Length: 192
Length: 225
Image (cartoon, rainbow over all chains, first blue to last red):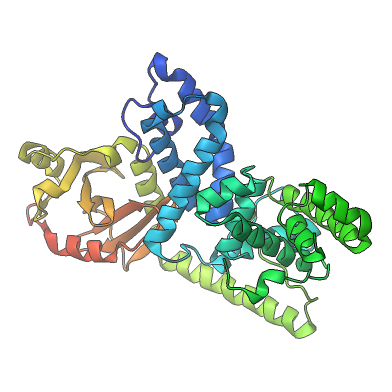
């Protein structure tokens, strides 16, 4: 809906404007990816409304630079990267978390989600509570399917730094699940 | 490979494997057990991330004590009264929703990049009983829209925080500023000299400065319909 251009396939995603025939494949591709992009953005931003904005902005950017996508098979990582950068832009603009976690957690529960008290429930909240420097590489890896090297490139970190962040993210979640924390060899060093 | 190096690799990606890691695990039962644990944990993490975050309240790790349960019950009662009071005192529950629905129904309004002509402005303000001080080159969209039984000016103004939608609601009275966040938009409705002004922006952000400007820049004409 928002930020879309009249007549573009992106606007048809939310605004009902039909796309030109030549652009129908990319339109369908963007539309089909939207739920996954939204999930990805939601875990990054921890706020559905902001995630929707991020995805809409990302889809618009993708549409504008659709000629850069030579291989439709590479669309998924391409779009996820655009979403991540859009989230980073928003994060940098605001210089803070846009929504406090308490605010997010106080929102109405969605039906069908794990019941409070379940391990999965606790784990989901533990992931939500991870600081962005740990949550982001974890989401990129698990939801996005990015390799360590790809995450390193995307976050402009060394591969070792990414490994450390992923290790620490899982180590924190380990404790939530009742397991002993593994010794953190990198703890003596500064945060990568 | 040392145990520390092995655990770093396993912790970073429990599913990954390298010849050096496998060689280490073949001779280190503790690290092998660590990998089993981390793989099991990772399966849970993947399940947890299969869906967007749920928004259920976080359960405390400890069972609630009796006084906590009483405190919780009291809080619920107080909160119920507070909600009831807010419900009774606020002017219209549906105004914000209708404003959001109206803006949602005109998605192209956000996209306008051309300045609105003087004629376009005159048409948008026609019959609304208002005059505007806003510099015309900041106004990117101006329509006279039917909302709640009246034609109201629907404007989109370019601001430092991006486009902001303004609806001038001469016939809608609100007692105090109220804010809302819906459909990816942040909005506020503020009282004005006559009626009220609704402002909406996409995403999060503060609209109060712009609302104050609008309160000064909208002039309510005496001979309004």
